[in-house]
Amino acid sequence: MQIIKCFLLSYVKYGDTDAILHCYTEEAGFQSFFAKGLYTSKNKKKPYLFPLNFLLFSVPKKADENRISRVSKIEAGADFHDFQNVAASSVLFFTADFLHQVLREEGKNELLFQEILNLRDEFIEQNFNAYLAFIFKFLLVSGVAPLKGSERFLNPESGIFEAEISHSFFDENVSEIWLKFLNAPEIYAVKLAKKEKTTFLDSLMIYCQFHITNFYIPKSLAVVREIFE
Image (cartoon, rainbow, N blue to C red; front, side):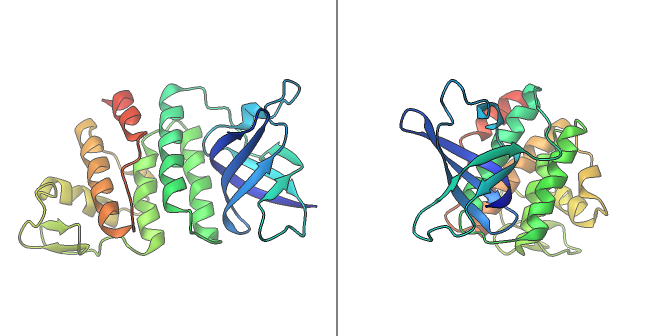
């Protein structure tokens, strides 16, 4: 057996008592796992099934490449935290929804795995707006973030700051928020006004549509809006 460290991104019930777990692992990137009997009345691991939970899976060392690995044991990671806050649950679900979409073809990436750990630490410290900085950080790690510039308007398609506005949503105010994150020594410490948070989130989604193949707006975005507006 080997121990797999992972973040749970999503799961689906399979049959009456089993489940398929979609995760981002430290060892191999995006992977899916089969968990037998997870929905039985005697199984006490079902409470672990919440978005971005840090889990440890015991799986066979020699798995069939043509089949998903079967989990023999599920344990909570060392920094287990039960997020009861509604705001925390909403942003966890949205962030996991976002990552499940953009990481499906992603292999091992230690930097990205550490950033997800950093994000959870921010949530534990009650910084529930950290998901905005995290999505920006994901763009940086992925190599598609904008380039710093001295001009006033960010062109979301080219990722370059220009003298003239190129996209109606990316006005001077929105572009300044992006520059603030690009220049910040610690992005999780960046403070935004309530309206700026919503605006920046919308601009992040627009930017992702330009730079991430087949990206679509996560349905859970509506829940986040409702919580924070």
